[in-house]
Amino acid sequence: MRTGAEVLVIGNEILTGKVQDVNGPFLIAGLREIGVELHRLTVLPDDLDLLASEIRRASTHVEHVFTTGGVGPTLDDVTIAAAARAFGVPLVRNPDLEHIIRTRATPPITDALLRMSDLPDGAVLVQGDVSIWPVVAMRNVHIFPGTPSLVRRKFAMIRERFRQAPFVLRRVDLVADEGHFSKTLDEVAARFPTVAFGSYPVDGADGYTAYVTFESKDASAVDAAVAAFVGGIPAETVVAVR
Image (cartoon, rainbow, N blue to C red; front, side):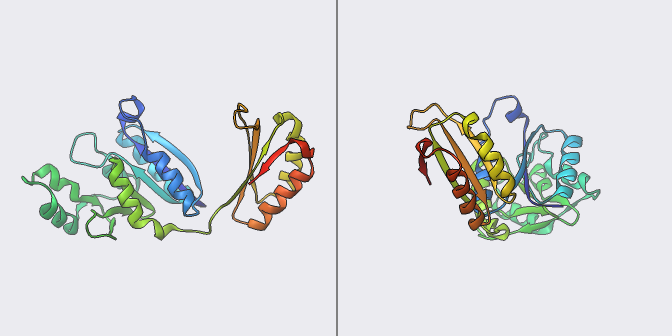
C-alpha cells in the first residue's frame, strides 16, 4: 500500500456539467498543505457497482481515501451503500447517528432521513467540533457529503489526524524554451531521485517564458537540486529563484 491519498468525487451532476466541482480542488490543496501526497482524483457517477469497485480498489492502494458526494436521503445518494458493498458488509443502523438526526434535523423526521443513519457494519463516526455533523469513516475511507461548505468544515475538523511532514517547494523562472534546458533537467533529476520536478512553459507576460519546480519533503535535496540545475544552464536565462 502506498503512502498518501486518493479522492473520489461522486455525482452525475459533475459529469454532466450541471455543477462545477470545487471539492476536488479544495482537497488537492488541503491535503498538500498537511503533507499528504495525492496520487489520484477520480470523478465518478452515482453508480452503486462502479463506486463499490472504485472504493475497494482505492482502499487497498493508498493509506487514505476521501469521497465527496452521494450522501443523503434521495435515490441518487448511494455512496454509503457502495462503501458497504466495497467491504462486503451489511448496512446497520448506527444509534449515535440516528440520535443526531432525530435531534438536529429539521422536522418532520422522515424514514428517508433516518435511513441516513444506516452505515456499513464497522463504520465509525469521527467527531471533532460537536456543532458539525460527524464524518463517517469505514476503515481507511472517509466519506464527505457533496455540499462544499460542509466539506470544508468537516475536513477542517479532522485534517490534523492525517498531517505528515510538509512538502518543500521551490521554483526557477527562466527566459528559455524547454528544449534549451531539458538535458540539464534530466541530468539533475537522475541525481536527485527524491525530488519531483515539473517544467511549465508560459506566455511570457510576467517576464519569463518557463518555470521549473522542485519539490520534496527533503529540504536539503531540493536546495541541492536547484543549485545543480541553475549551475548547469546559462546564467542569463535565469530570471528568479524562489
